[in-house]
Length: 97
Image (cartoon, rainbow, N blue to C red; front, side, top):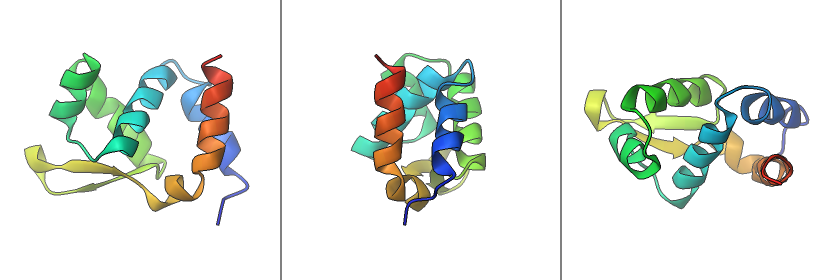
């Protein structure tokens, strides 16, 4: 069931902060398939540490989950984000105009 507060959270994470554009790119890649930080870093041509930071922000806000340990950690879209995917797509479309 979609969360009525999700829209505010999504606006804050993707439009209200400097790294929002990169977080959108990360989420878009994770919707295609789960990936680790190294794969995201190479695909998005971003620094490994930058990806680590964005993943930490997304995980702290329950938009991604992870499985595995250390360098074997693979990230997935969370059930919370899946339930609010329509809202995410709406926010994303307004940001990327």
